[in-house]
Image (tube, rainbow, N blue to C red; front, side, top):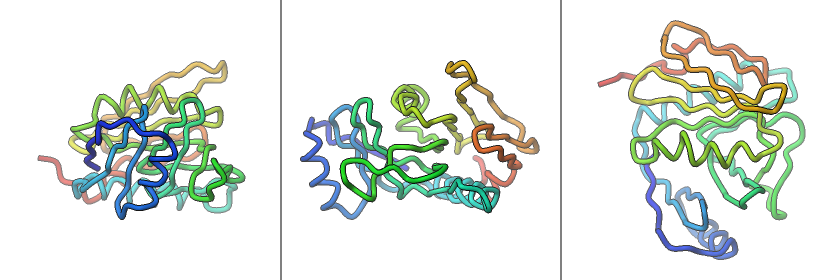
Amino acid sequence: MSSGANRKKVSREEFLAYFDSIDHKAEWLDGEIWDMVGGTPAHSLIGANITGELGNHLKGSDCFAYNSDLVVQIEADASIVLPDASVVCGELLTAWDRKDFVKNPTLVVEVRSKDRENYDLEGKFLKYITIPTLREYVVIDQYEVKIDVFYRTDNGLWDIRSYIDRFANITFQSIKVTIPIAEIYRGVSFG
C-alpha cells in the first residue's frame, strides 16, 4: 500500500481524531501521520493470500489471523500501525480503551512497497521488536519472490531467514505453521 506522510507532527489525541474522521487507513509513526492510499494489485493479493493461508492453518488453535484492518499500537513509542497481516495468539489485549487497537501480536507481516521499502525493513522492524509478545516479523516482496522472516530466538535475540525459492515452503516458528511460498504468491505476476 502506498503511503505519504503529512509531515506534520501531531499529538496522539490529534491523530486519533484524524483517524476516526477519515475513510482510508493511516498510521502514526514518530508523531507523523502516514496516510495509506492505493496499493498495487500485487500488494493487495499477497496480503489476502498470506492472511488466508495463515487463517486456514490456524484453525483449531488459539491463534487467529487478521488482515490489514487490525490496528496495532506499539507501546514503547506509542506508534499506531496497520500491518498487512498479523496473528494474535490468546486474548486480544486492547490499547487506550479502544476495542479496535491491539498491542499483543505474535506475528506481523508487511508487504514491501517501493516508497517505504527501507522503512519496512529497518524503521518498522525496530519499532515492532519492542512488542514483548512479538515472535516473528515477516517482510514479503511484491516485485520478486523474496521473503525475509525476522524471528526472536530463545535467548531473546533476533535472527533472519530469507526465502527466494517460489517452490519452497516457509515455516513460521512462532505459530508452528508451514506454508508453500507458491501459495503466498498465487496469482501474482512479476514484471
